[in-house]
Length: 337
Image (cartoon, rainbow, N blue to C red; front, side, top):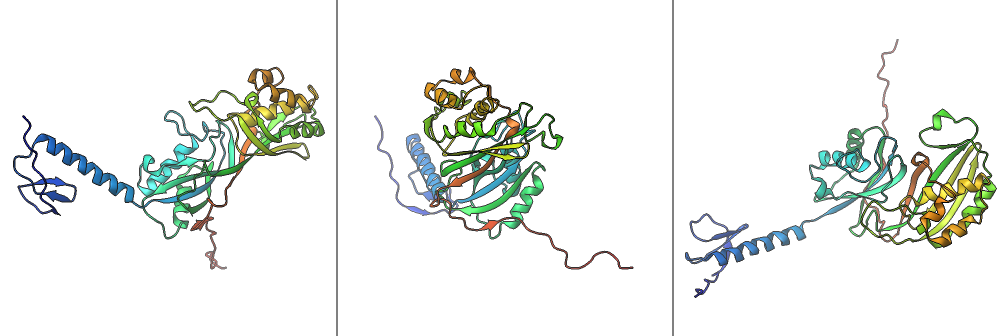
């Protein structure tokens, strides 16, 4: 038969004693004949106390605006085997904050692919302590990061801000150098098209992307287990000429895996006058990636740049902010002759 379990008499502040069972900073005075089942219950109580303490621990959220040359990185997303931008940023943050990566919870606005660049990538991280000034942290971060990654801005944000889920729209730019000979100074950031392109035809085709559509035909199979919503809203799709340089700028509520590069690939075929501008409607209506493959292959990543991320105003209430610090010389340090 089970014996009646002894009951707790009272909670008391912790004091050294040979009696009782320790529960965090407190001790329960119990009968010496405490059963194993009672001890297990007390361990559960200990866990509850620790959980409550974790829930009441203050958290501070910080927003980063990051630029990077993606040439030598395997994209943004953390990977154990290959260098990524997120890995480098987390390494710098762990050194500065002394927190582990699972405590920092660094999240980026977009998972740029290998070779894709960013001027306005946004990320957030969390600390259990506050900062009075961010300029020192900002300087330390850029001092630890490699030269092809730079934090342009740090600011405090409210708890409801999320680098990914608070996004209102994203802006991507894809650059094409349209001349017989490629400018070597653009080779890492611009796709070379030796074929003469028709920008007017490309603009006509780009207008068909604007609006809310099912973009299944323009998405490669995702590398993760999530099933994304294929319906996206394209706000604008501009084709701008700057001498031999064509800049395709698209703004949308969100983008599927490789969607931008696949849209650009079809516009290139339109620009070469290999297909008519209304081919966009046909491929969109098919909702089949194989239909796009009949006309165009995906363009390489190095011409693509995540230019900016726009957020819902109610979530983006910036507090303490650092835009970097200018160095000044107060007096000449060279000897006068």
